Length: 127
Image 1 (tube, rainbow, N blue to C red):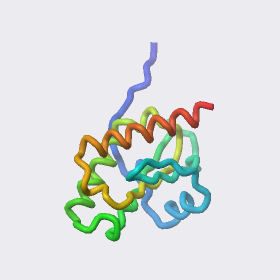
Image 2: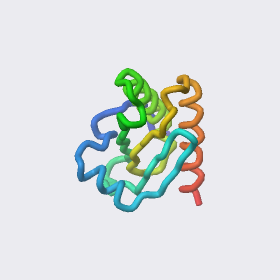
Image 3: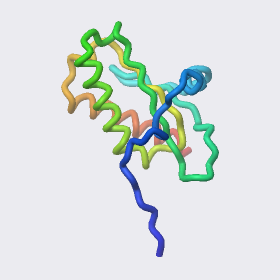
Image 4: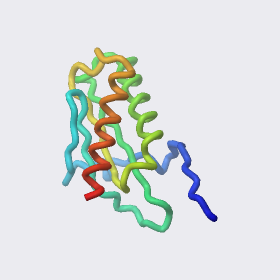
């Protein structure tokens, strides 16, 4: 009996890196959101020779979160939440953007909002 090993890594292959990769998501996105997040997703256009691959891009604007410390905290939380949930998500590329006021939330509240959005994405792609 062969079981598929779930890895919880966030490797280079799990990130959107080039402006072209970001532009592909921004061109025809499906939007998911909450009070403090907007997540744009498109189906992943990577070859499916390996296992399904999700890629994450972050667009945390200085206009929305003034302090670098707070921007970096939000990025860390988003990356960690994605890393733990990526094996449940469909093969998509996503860009996470934030809205004003997110720097007022604590880590637990941010995680709750992200978990809710991950569940919405999974539900929408099961249909």
